[in-house]
Length: 294
Image (cartoon, rainbow, N blue to C red; front, side):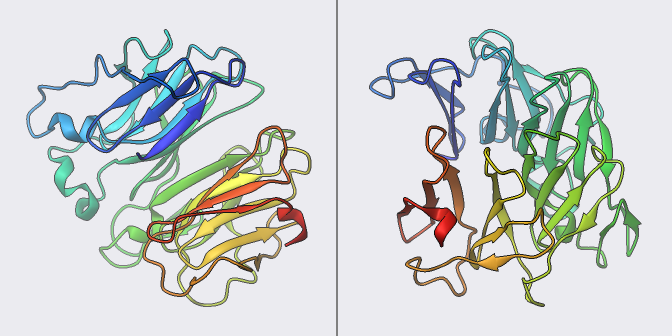
């Protein structure tokens, strides 16, 4: 399993994203699952179906839960009928010939998708090596909001070091539900970035993280207090209570934290935002019933 999404209106409807297995759907709270990957097959040269069917993230339109977006190893897919069928909506996302080499060439692997809660035509996509893209038409077309191309060039505040663009790989996005022009981006090596103008400009917000490279794999915003943001990193869980001005680690009980290979994955209980779950690669799942007191 790579990701899971819950219908915000019918919570017994679940969507599951897998590694090379596409998408599954349950309408009975997970008792039974049906494969829902029609349209994700590909015959394009150099693009094996496995790349399209590895689902890194799923997002459900909060205004129309039959509309979903899937971030895959080879771009973005969209469904308008509850995952019955999918179409590729990657126009404007840089294309390359061989997804198997994307990690090294900076090709577009889509890691995350976020939908503006007040205007579902506005979509943001987090990618590996290309930064964050924005669509203002429900995914029909995309434009880059922060791109790093080539050697030692800076675009939108993100620095690419040498020929390796891992520093601009973006794995997580979170939109402020009360001020959707405020967005946080979690990067592969450079911590957290923030925009207050819907992606026109970005700035690093990493005070408190020290000099060690920080890989951010997930971001969660407290729905009741959106200045409180949580990030899952390879160093554990961090939190800011002032919109990213500074962060502190809240790793009590989450051991061992040092030198974890993959970042912690976070989820907030939608009915009780004080309860948070932290998933780790090798150490299982942790729960905090009062995360705000950590």
